[in-house]
Image 1 (cartoon, rainbow, N blue to C red):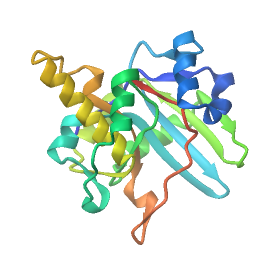
Image 2: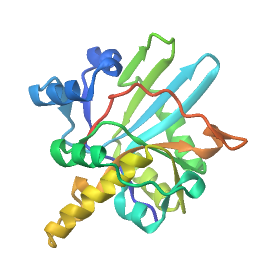
Image 3: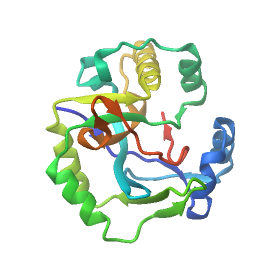
Length: 225
C-alpha cells in the first residue's frame, strides 16, 4: 500500500504564477518569509496540465511517504542507486523547504483519470502561457470525496518509479532519518516524513525506454518540512 497524500503547499497568488520560473531558490525563500507566497491551511492535490502544441500531459502534485521510499515501494527507474549529496541534505536541514518535486511514474488508474477529467470541466486555479508557448493549467483538488478516491487509488498502486529528482528523494530520506534518530517520539504524520512529488502515468511519459517529462513551471509549489 502506497501512502501518497495531499499537502499544504506553499504557492503564489494567481498574478505571480507566470514569473515563478525565473526565481532562484533564495528568492523563493525570501518571498515565503515576506508573505508574498502563502501556505495553504489545509491539504490539497494539484492537477497540473501542460499543453505543448498538440501534446497534452497531466501530472498530480502531492506528497509521497519516505517510508515507501525506504521500503522499496518507490524505486529508482532502472534500479540505479543514488547517493545523498551534501548540498541537497544541507539545504533541507537549513531551510526545511523543498521546491523541486520528485517525478514519480505509476501505471494508469482509471479512477484517477476520471477524477482529473471531471475536475478539468471547472475553472482552474491557475492558467498562463510561458515564453516557450507552453500552456499551463492547474486545478486544486480539495473536495473531500475526490481526495479520498485518489488516496484509495494510490494505496492500491503497487509500485512507483522515480524518473527525476533522485537526489532530492535520497536527501529527503536522510533528513527524515536524522530527525527520527534525534527524537524517538516523532510524529509519523509530520511533513518531514514526506517529500513533494508529481505523479505521472507511466504510459504517457515513457516510450521505448525514453522518459519525457512535462515542462512544469519551476517553483509553482513548495513543501515545508
